[in-house]
Length: 566
Image 1 (cartoon, helix red, strand yellow):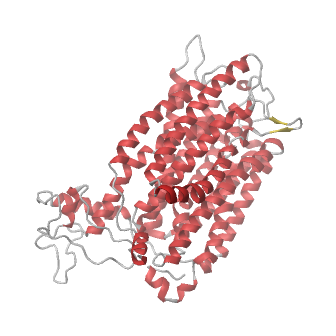
Image 2 (cartoon, helix red, strand yellow):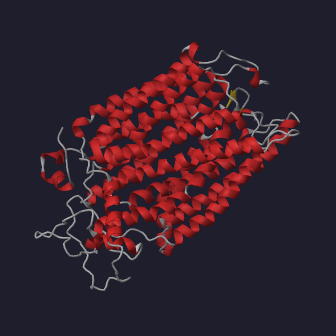
Image 3 (cartoon, rainbow, N blue to C red):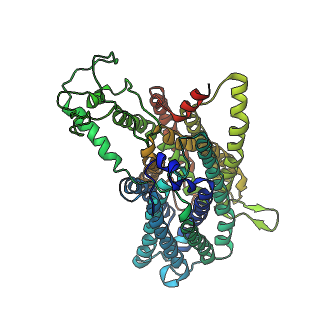
């Protein structure tokens, strides 16, 4: 396998025939089928845990959130392995086999009667049904573990591997990369809609075996398609661990902690600022934020050899390396402010299916909407709003008022929509429960508004986060950047699990059930929704504080092209 080490090799060698949209077609095809496989399992997984494995609502919610937390934590490890050791192609390849193995294992838990509890039709008293035994839980968790390992390799590398196929030193390559992001979002939305409608309907109304076998078969096709495109891909060589570079800057700054440097660069201090490497697409300039790190780039006696290079990389770092660490430090507070919005989404995802199960889901006289398909309203909202925002609203605002929302403003608007979604969810539940106690079913379409609000939250906040991380990190840290968003999901799911467990334990008493009772009609789920909304308000204040002090990264290659044109 030939390896392209930098963009210069990409354009001046036989490798120039690789990459481009021909390679992207295989990558997007693999992405689409792989997501169809994994989302086909996760979309209706709460229903599988409660209906087939007969878990109680809180127990099933904790299993779901812990699994999703581990699934979203694994990409950080996958990004480190990819960037430092094996590269993106090999990471995706190995991870795809783990995903396929995980899907096969979970499918077996539905297929073999030894791997799930016996059927139970006692709908009114599900607590009397037999739950899963230790062997059944071990096999289930083994399958979920394989799926998490697969996601850990695929998620942080999929977008960067697609970006690798374009030469970002050309305007054509930058436009191709932007178009790739659009296609990535579009195919993702289509997969979400199909998973939450067709696959969920098959699982609920035909067979869980067939409903799990289809995603497994699609994952097998994704693996085959990925390897068919091998001869078209551009392969970028791993450049070593990002964290070793971060450590060098911190150690060098600590060694020179006694140095005195001016707050503004007045030319009295000499900084080590060599020419950029060929694979560096944006040259970072020295900034005044986190000045203590600048000491790592100050040239002291004995820091340079006769050839003008570093004598000790743990004592002298370049301005580029220092500014890359600053990029990471600036992003972390903003990253942490996005967690609570995902808590709102994961809370809704965990309880929307049990809610919908107790509501009137009929469309006409003969068709009943599967409870797991209700969430499709969120994805339809995303699919409608994103093109309107990108193609109509943004150009109109710029043409009329010369105004464009920054990425941080988009993320803040998304946080507001998450708060509104939780307040709406609490109100809807406060209407549904009293009616249910009077044996009156509420239409499932009452859930539509909160789902649409959550769709707007994702359109602004989640897509804004992905673009923010990709634009604010240096190129060789892109896998790390793409692992931060799943890491937000991991933290959110763990926080959700902690909140669910705590509320379940302390909200109940001798005379009244807890808020998250297995029977939603006896609990107070609306109180839990209001609590999440309150956390969202506090988080909005925190995000505002982080955003107002944030300094965007300088040295964008896109800005360079605009300057050349002018």
